[in-house]
Amino acid sequence: MSVRSFLSSPNGDPGTLRRRVDAVIDSALDEKRLVGAVVLVAERGESRYRRAAGLADRERARPMREDALFRLASISKPIVSTAVMVLVAQASLSLDDEVTRWLPEFRPRLPDGREARITVRQLLSHTAGLGYRFLEVDESGPYAQAGVSDGMDASNISLDDNVRRIASVPLGYAPGAAWGYSLAVDVLGLLIERVTGTTLQVAIRALVTTPLGMTDTAFFATDPLRLAAVYVNDAPEPHRMRDEEIVAPFEGTTGIRFAPSRALDRDAFASGGAGMVGTAGDFLRLLDTLRSGGGALLPSTLVDQMGSVHSGEAGPPDAPGYGFGLGFSVLRDPVRANSPESVGTWRWGGAYGHSWFVDRVRGLSVVAFTNTLYEGMSGTFVAQLRDAVYGEAGGLGDDERRDG
View (cartoon, rainbow, N blue to C red):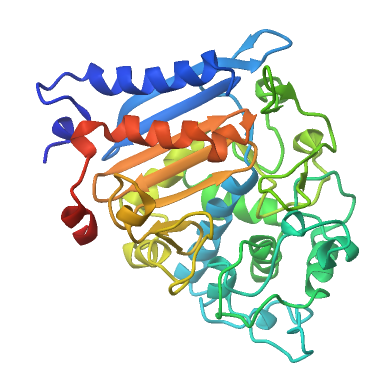
């Protein structure tokens, strides 16, 4: 299949993809589900669609720009996970190293008090038994009682302090026995510091962002004038997020305490799981490097490991058909997921309103950064954008989906 034949209409019209994606974005803006967005689509390294739409700051009537800076939230996770894999490629550590080799103080115990062996691989795949404060039912939960930060609030503690607090909470399950979204990547951030002997900010620059030319990606806004404002879905239109506003992504949870001002605080601790700021273009560069086999950054064997399921039969409970790799989810069953994506497609999002996916079979890398939560992360916009990218040409029959 040629590059042109997949994303174009049957008669080769290159405008078809643009019309489909434009319609999805325009609908989300017109219906006030989104305030602004940057959407990029690449196929086998070739740019096929790029658009900045809506407003970066509604109150100041500032249009969205393609180089707008966004608070990344969990978009940070694939970046930091890639840094870990670069250290593995350099033989500085191993995926099956016990975390205590580098963090001897990190010894969370099982609920019955027994010691547990946690590996780097289990942290990367969220199978280590850790959790998130925002997923607890209320403020009496163990992470809340321990004063743990999820990495998006205005906290004056250090990364060492936060990891120490995480370690004080009993594990939710024996490492490797289940899957649970967690603060594991924040623990990996401290591990990177110990392995490299420098700060996480410096290490990420050296290991990932500088080699890939991701000049706008850091643990703070490199150019505050380009930083997009943040909005929360509401009626009749999204409202501008307040500092320390709590918004629950899932019913029955205490919710995330957001501090948009954290992106301007160079002294805030470097949260590997949620603390970075960057552009859609920078992130697409990372995704396309991994999609194409890692380039000079990583050997293809390690990229293949990242994109393989390491969570057994477990995976995100709200995403049927998906397992989890080393840094992002991996599609196992497109039929269960009700998705036109190929088996093995990578996907994840960010709580500030972002989503992305990589379909290596089709050669697709797609990034959608918005300034509106949670529509841009898990709302109808996400599925509509996916379907617009694939269109009728991307539909697969059940047999083809299962076979990959």
